[in-house]
Image (cartoon, rainbow, N blue to C red; front, side, top):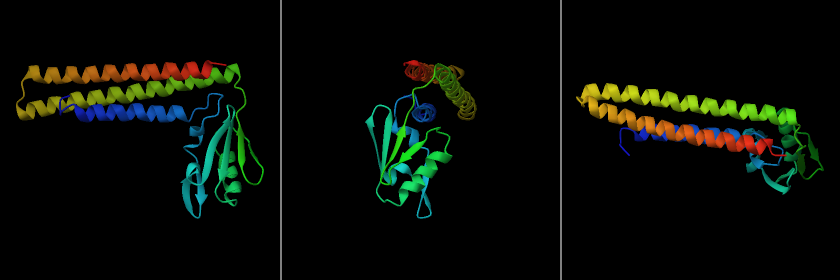
Length: 184
């Protein structure tokens, strides 16, 4: 890969990775510990991810078990889950917290699927913006360095190939996640 194009490949890759991270936080009816990735709990004055103050496991397909390393953290973790937008009600037995994932209704599945497609479209827009920035940079650099028009067109064609590749990967990820959500 051309050195002039490598930074744009990296940026597109980051856009794709960001989309996958967002998809991880969308619950699809099955227990997925990644829904907790965005949550922070107050641990002696510092916001910490739940995974750093507790053991998070999936003992059953529709349950997440959170076992804090310190008993005093149970209430703090429970409060963080309740105030989040996860829409889950934790059950607390004093030592551990259980999160039960209810079966999604058809309407909720369709809404989540729509949200997934919206996030995918946002990622594609980000990739296209990176393409635009790359094309502009190649033109400016080409004029400044005296690179031929043909070479500039070749570089822009390489950027377009990268764009097409990432758009296809994003479409595939969106379809896969939408199918996962719609599967009962």
